[in-house]
Length: 225
Image (cartoon, rainbow, N blue to C red; front, side, top):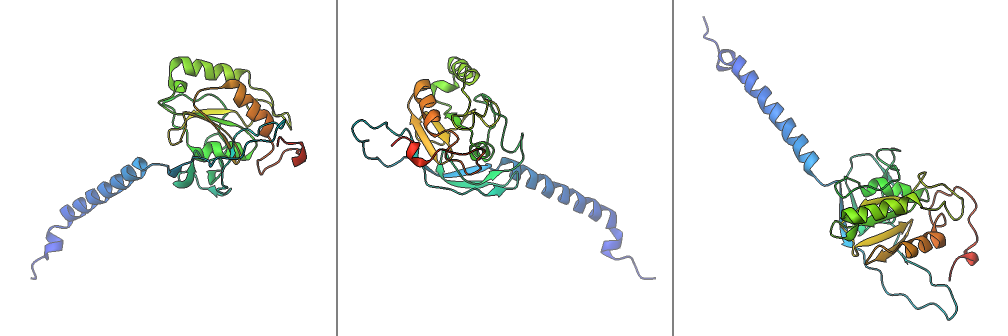
């Protein structure tokens, strides 16, 4: 009678070990996937200086940021942005969770991804960002931001009420100033929270630059020079 082979003699422990190795590999993959950052930034964007407005002209607040596209990516896919904070670019398309996200004030410890709020920009909303080292991350700053949100005016073109598309107020550390206000394709850089300037920026550019229009936008001649 032929003696059993090595595999036959040790089939059970081999199967058990193989199963354990498989479980370990799956666990390692899940851990590595979950620990990878959801996005990356190539550059903390600093706009080039622009010419001063003509005498008597209304200054155009903020700076035009180079376009980064409008692609919809699957939720969970990592995105690398050329410029941060991004005022356009690839984003998630899962309303309410992936993007657009719920407009409100998000705290310093909330995990808020640009892939979500870029979709709010695409719909015409405004996003106000603060870094973790700014006054916006303090308890006093959070109270100030909540008061700002509570009194935020409707859209200057379509009259979209607060809470539909914006404002989204969230922490974002990969940017060149402590605060930045964004509409699609345009960024207002701020060293401190300046409510009057942010509202003036919204009045100038809100609901005018985004690709998914909700109503007729005034001709460019009506915009500030």
